[in-house]
Image (cartoon, rainbow, N blue to C red):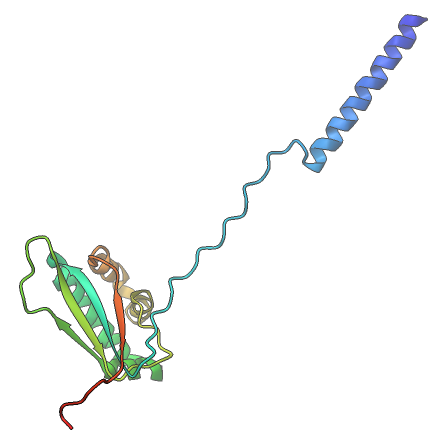
Length: 169
């Protein structure tokens, strides 16, 4: 009789343990904790200009200047052919200058983008200009990417300018 009641007790205990185990697994107590949700990648910040005149300074690898010039010619064409008034206004204010001095071996070539007048709400970032290029020239996306990838030798610097003195007056 003892063996029978002991066996029944063991079965009940085993059933209880199994039930607790199943409930615990179902509620996730034994489940591995999920890693914390990663924040969504942030879009690159817009490069907006807050003054009437500004300068953007690009450092381009010396052996990639032809690629950068080609891409900037495409940017000009895309801005001019755009039906967006903001883009055509941007095109009217951009002049690009390249350092006339040969850089020392291994140094970057400095490009100065003079923006006069600026379009204050416009995004002058390279990421935004590339989106414009890809939309304007979808058949050339790979060529555009190939030419711009790795051409920059450093970050773009932005200088918003205020007229301090006009010698012509």
